[in-house]
View (cartoon, rainbow, N blue to C red):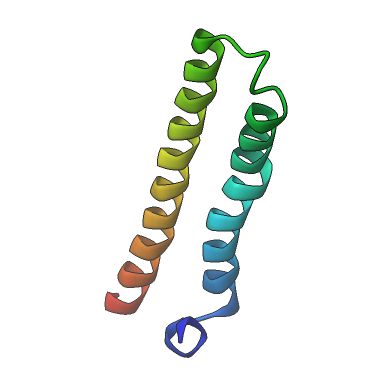
Length: 77
């Protein structure tokens, strides 16, 4: 459905990059590290990992929002 509504291929790649890059480059390694070293992590280290995960998630949502905003602004102008 996104392909039909998107004004160009760059928009689709921008949205895919905004979601997949954040997940593959930041979220998956953090979650894997926490799962592998679950018994060896202190509570402070675990809180730090999840703090970084939350920050990266917020950055991902901002990136998606920016891409969606550029789609809306591109159609209205």
